[in-house]
Image (tube, rainbow, N blue to C red):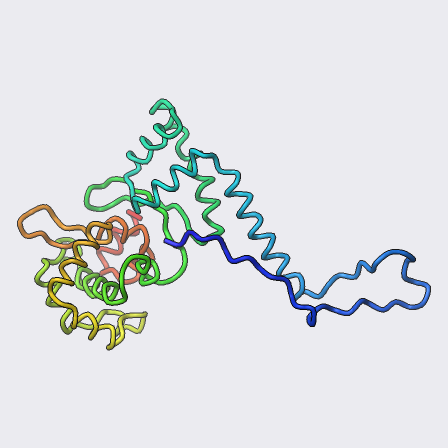
Amino acid sequence: QPSADPPASHGPSERFRSPPPSHPKGREPAGRESSARPPAELSLPRRRDEGAQKMANRDAALSREQHAFLQALMAKGAMPEKSAKRLYAEIANMDPAEANKTFSRFWNPIASALGYLDLDIRLIRYQEDQQLYMGVVNKTGGEAAKLATRLTPEQIALFRVVLDEIMRDDRTVERGVDVITALNATQVAPTQGETQGDGGLSQAQTQSVAKMSKMEKEATLKQLCKDGWLAQTDDEAGFLKLGVRAFLELKHFLLEQAPERARAKWERML
């Protein structure tokens, strides 16, 4: 998840500075510089500076408790709301009942400050356990950009193939897919986006996934489950389903690609 401050903006070079305005003789006040308004293009760096300063002011306005909470939430990736409330009570040294009442007022300023980095705090109800979860999400970029912080391009491509296999129809969304089916799908199958023109994998990416060894694919699937992008059922079959973090980060993509019955359910849930 990107957390760096926006790059500092630099003013225009000397050759772009507008020449001093000319005034008819006698009209310019003696001893004072002209107050003529600079061209719009010279005002843009000032506006970017002001935006960066606003972000810095918002960040500085957050309390130590809010900073500590944000760091813990980003480290977790996703957290049940109940756990987040307990964390808030512990950090703020507050009675749990009081923390429950003031929790929204506590994290809303954090979400506002994150907005300057195109990040947000999102709440969703996860379909598997019906619990509310919260996490810091990236509001810009495609699904690959949101996975790119820890995974290689080949691993991201593998996730996309497995994601499309899960979302093949309402039955696979509900039940999930077994690991063998998921691994077989990575050998030859193109993604849905490849046929629908919505940003699916290229032929080169599909080939790169096919070249991954079985051990590499299995290790990647385990990592995706650990990070919350996928979830594996506890039964003997161990089917792969969409994880909490997939719903948090890829909400709009999932709603666009989901089968009809799943989309209707997710629109109510998300």
